Image (cartoon, rainbow, N blue to C red; front, side, top):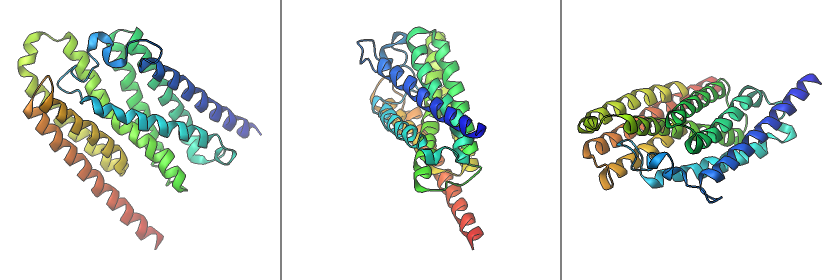
Length: 266
């Protein structure tokens, strides 16, 4: 009985966290008459805020993530999911990720710029924890594969690139103007680091969805540098190469996982 009560509390916490996130998202989108996220922090969070900011259409992925999280929240509240061990392992962490998602929007509007970096880094850490926990057991159904692994993988992969863009925007806002002359060098260096980190993550997690979400952000970063300010062909080309490398590594890792699973079933 005590365990059943804890499960119900977890399910309720996930629902409450989603409610907070969605209200914050509505404020962040400007629905209630406030400035949209791209106009906050003196425009530093726009798609022209730094050399590592993806072009505007990249952010449409949030609609897919939010929709997926809403469906997940409804599904996880069903009685049949109450005592599922994967739900028990990851549920509280997923709730924390949605709270941090909403807090980032609050920080963007009301807090100092550095607070947005702090919150998004915490969000990335929490999502990484979610992915690790989910990786300890295989999904027991198609719904789990999509709503647990898929949605959170999409969230994790995108937030990885969003963290880079957010941090770059903050550093750009406080850095001396002289640093702008070395933007190509710094940008390429950061993208190389992103390639290493995301490739290592893809190899460990052995999932393709996070890599695809990261690649989405990187391709739109390249589009932004090719077509909009601040322009940089070098950074744009590097972003495309990095996107390709990450997807390739993830595909190989996922294939190895699939073959290993098939061998075990035999």
